[in-house]
Image (tube, rainbow, N blue to C red):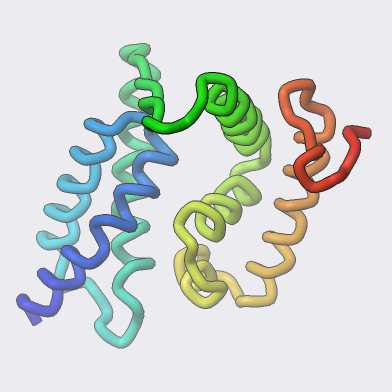
Length: 174
């Protein structure tokens, strides 16, 4: 079992980094959070139910640790670092992409917690409905309806945002 858990942790880390970064917004802190979550998962390996998928169990450990870090950060009032500009993109294209990304990120933060989490799990973690249901401890149908509501609410927020335009899909801002 020890070798299986170790391999499962290693397999989960790249996926976990994306989740940590989406929650924390800082590369170094996200790496640290993943390592701490891995250590906590290792320490709690006897409590893992091997009949269930590993990643949802690991994600809960990671998420709780990231939320603790965010609470601590709010007390200290820390900063987040910006994404580096990728080479090969024009400054204008990069600026437009950055503005759209920021508008989406802000819109996601304006969603209620349950809708924000479902968007994160599906679109940034790329989890299946079954994996999301396991993490959220609810039926798959609930996951699907919550995801529908979350997308609808996110679209409504984005339509009201002056920094986001749907023109790339031929839609007009309403």
